[in-house]
Image (tube, rainbow, N blue to C red; front, side):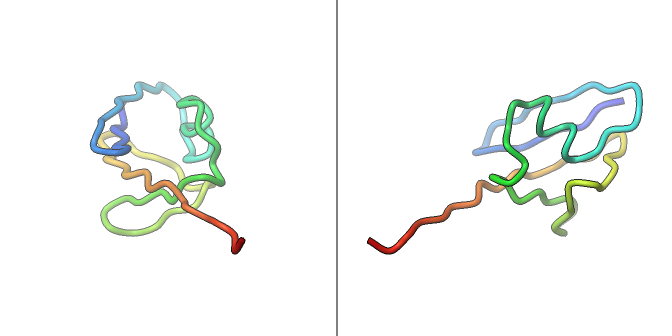
Length: 68
């Protein structure tokens, strides 16, 4: 089974053979879960959500800044 992640116009395909959560997938991609919004089919999903074969997941970096 596979899932495609889209980050900054680049696609990354991840193969998996067991259940895969958003949090586990982000860790496999060496990304901090709290640093990204995760979108599937136009809807925001949470870290505990299970991914399905054929999902296309858009990763949106969270930008934060302070007042200086």
